[in-house]
Image 1 (cartoon, helix red, strand yellow):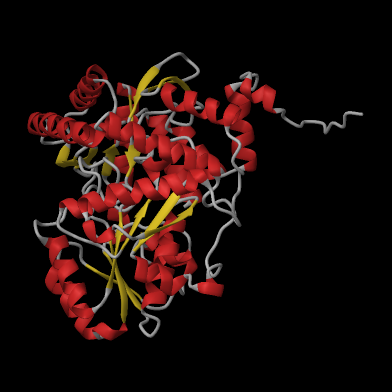
Image 2 (cartoon, rainbow, N blue to C red):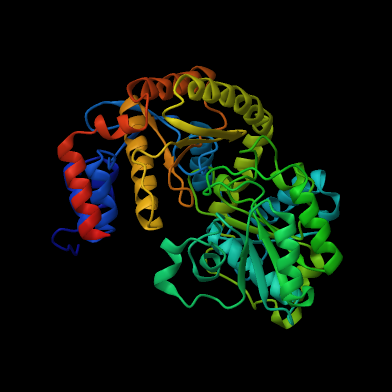
Length: 478
């Protein structure tokens, strides 16, 4: 006897695309993050979108756009055929356990080994390091913090940097100095301290004030992604490593966004001269198709956390599951075979040249452009110049980026907001995006700039009805 539930949506209905776009939006709003989705709808950004190639999406009206969104988690675009074909083979032929929590696993062993070989090639001190898998970047950070604390149990302070972003679970959030995300949840984890990014003297003073023996770890992004692609001064990361080594402080490199080729290097921290004690990876490792996080720690640190009968002191249900491990192995293979980090470096240099030329042509729109590899930032002048209070200035900055995102969307480019840099929009194109599409992406960015030669044009070119609805939304839902 088959049991049914009225209104239950079958997998075949979704796979067969039998849900209308309007119904998808209605259900997603009603049962999900309604305010976020309503805000996106007001901007005509809500979708749903159909993947028509790994690098292009299509809306319900048949309009195609180049996808540079995905927050650096789509190294090969969305649903690359080679990766999808591998997953199909895996599902047909794999005989390994799906959740090997209490046994060895061929897929997990392979991915651990490959990650360490790649890391040790750049940083030989990591040739015997260990890997702990989870299901996201923020989980990888939470694990890294626990590993560091196990290594320095008498210390109590963690230092991160202004404009940084490490996730939104509780410890990760405590390391992310953003009042919008933190304030509702205060008091946060005690001992989380912040200092200006790129300022070595400020870091030295903070460590001295806290006392080095009381500092567990310094947590640092080699390049701040959500902060708006902030690139530190030359030598800063190397100096941070040397400072922490003198005091025995653990260094955690958050490479969740920068690692595995995005910035033109396999590991951006290594490229900048930092040899961290712990490294976190995530986004590209899943190939855009599965959730995965990885925390890599030196052997001595790993064994402090998970020794003997306490080796289950840190665990999770889905970390190390065979499907995610298999996709991780295949993703690294595709990055290697395509030499995608080197390609990212080359295209990044081309893209930065295009971005700078566009900014020179439209100095009233962009105040700065930044890039490292295939990680690009377009920083807008504020649409409206507001003084104090700071909250109004931040609102003007955020509105500028949102309207800029909309204009790029209209020009045929899907981009990302930057969570810790209010007037910055990021482009994170796939590392294997075809050259002609990459060039067209910048043509479309230039088209958006032509339509909006000054930042106030972003407001002028938005229909008044949309502006009014957005203002009402902000005032009543903020």
